Image 1 (tube, rainbow, N blue to C red):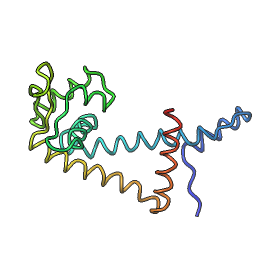
Image 2: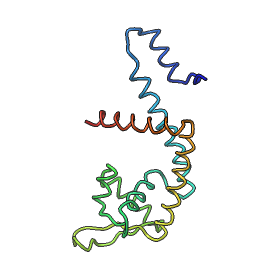
Image 3: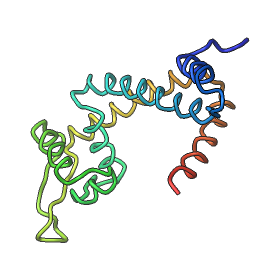
Image 4: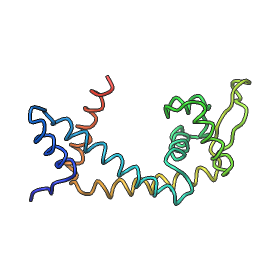
Length: 165
């Protein structure tokens, strides 16, 4: 059974017509990665919207959740983990605090600093939202069998390592 042609195939075909001298193998890979990322980003946004949060807000809550009890980090630690400016982080924290999903308090270890902590409601919400997001990802990955999914994960790990060196 052959896989049907996709929009990337059409783009590659157009380049082959107008610039047959180009090696478009990389474009075939990254064109698909970019399209998958966009499609999955949209699906994840919909999954998290049911919980009243965006993907960016999910990332903040998930980072706090992964930090384990007491689910607390400084705004600086959050910014570094999420690769966000402090200004971008402040906006997300403001919204999540207004929603009662986290609280900011003085850092007990640094009187000049703040600590961001998940509330009980934030913990409940992120535990539900992460399950919903994983269900969306698992459903999309079901196009591959288990061996293919494992092989793809390994290949992408290698590609990511090579792209970030």
